[in-house]
Length: 349
Image 1 (cartoon, rainbow, N blue to C red):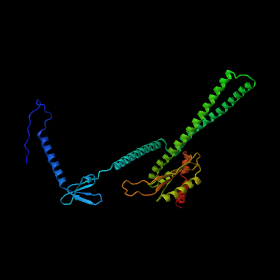
Image 2: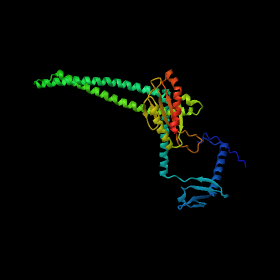
Image 3: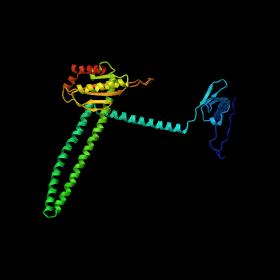
């Protein structure tokens, strides 16, 4: 049925504003009719809910005490046309809100951690570069500490002499001169200042060690993740001087990890300087035939399409040699290749 086109007059002087056009009125009538039909159909549906005993009840009207329950709307053919979920309680809403907050915090922490790892990988080419930077900062503080301690001992001797002079004047029945008193106060202040500087440097040293311990672990984990991806390609193990060990369970991983750490302590020519439950790394290979080693425990990467999470982790073992030409040539020798094979044999034994 065609709707008549409604006309209207210009109401500029009548006080009315924004008159509706004929097409707008037609749309308004159409949607009004549509929504009325939907509302009518919904009223004609059978409603089903669960009562206080947990049994399903159905009817044309929903008892008021079940308004907030899960409601199914069924048409005259028995087809469920609509489902209104149960209204959540305040406790459930609060729990959801808290969970969402925790997930948001975890996501933000992961974002910051990934960003931090990315900066580390861009700042240092290898773990040895990172260790060189650490040693450089610690050596500066160590040299400064040596100078401060020497100055402190010298100032203590000076102060003892001044105290001795003051005691001798008192025993002689003389007053301590103003000049001596001033020098005593000045030297006492210098002693306090030197002790304060030494204490501050000790705290700085501990903070640097703590920061670098964190950085070493994060760098090792991130670098090993890159290595483990490369090890999936043929011929990369020999080029990277690395071995990938896959664990099938936590118990198996614990056994492999214990054996791997023992291997490093036995066969590396540089001593272990950092060891946690995720990494073990030996010191910088300074000599051409030094063999430094690193060990990382990685979480097994899960494919996005995987429905079931795979258990176990991955252990990455890598041998590092001196960066000079002779050191790199040594790393390509049969001796290093033999150690890689020996490592795999010992871990799986």
